[in-house]
View 1 (tube, helix red, strand yellow):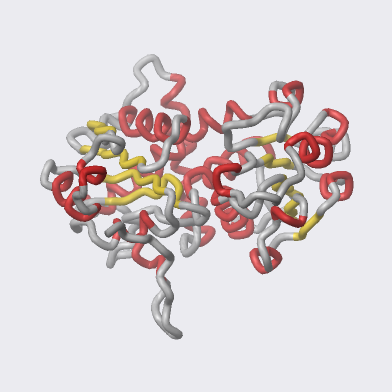
View 2: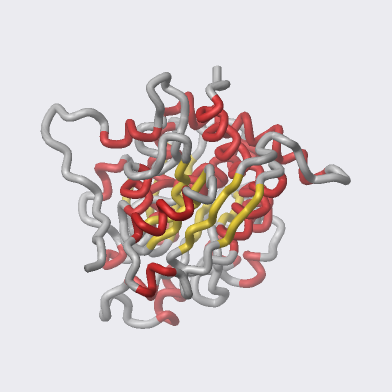
Length: 337
């Protein structure tokens, strides 16, 4: 019987469920969610990433920090951008990388997920990078791995995508300096987006000036205001005086029918065109976690325009993921300070 991964119910007065991310000395061992990290750890990850981004500019794009370590990519859900940048990050840290082909793996033949994990651990794996279509999968795996193994969440269901949110914050900081003066708008399919949830947590932890979400009512989660955002249903009003615009992909694979009249209507009202971009500040930057659907969420001239930092996000993702990997691995070496 298939195991269903859900976020665990926490009894009253129970410890923080995301404390599992840290070891007994308070070192970062896993990265499962932005929740529980706090501004100090988020800032430490971003500062560490600054040093790794420069590795890309070297003739030899490698540092020996994870030499002799093995990183296993466990992608139960398809991905190109995220899996590739995690793989590049691990290789630039000099780790050995194993990409598990889950379409033909033993889990498809009836073997349990935990048995699969135990067999990979027996191959002396040191880190699992996990993407799964069910929320809580990475947390479930982190609770069952051997003490020397770290788990990084590369996206689980609708719940969390922590490294995407961190690389977005890193990109914003590089362009805008700080966060407190900024107005940031997240636009599109908020309801089904794990990226949006992680972005809300990271930006509010970093004390962004104002965080807005813009979407039709059918694509706004219930009580989203509790996550520290202002809700707008009109693009002109929502983009007024905004410093950063983060567009989201329509998550068609997660939608129930009837949530949108048509993609054409969505683009007319919420797609980011040059005309709509003019409602934001003149120096506003445009972001998208990808893959971007041109003519649905964003106009090509905007995606490729001077205010777009979409390709920078991809490049920055390598440095941020190198930072997370090195910090988690150093916890298992016991050399974090």
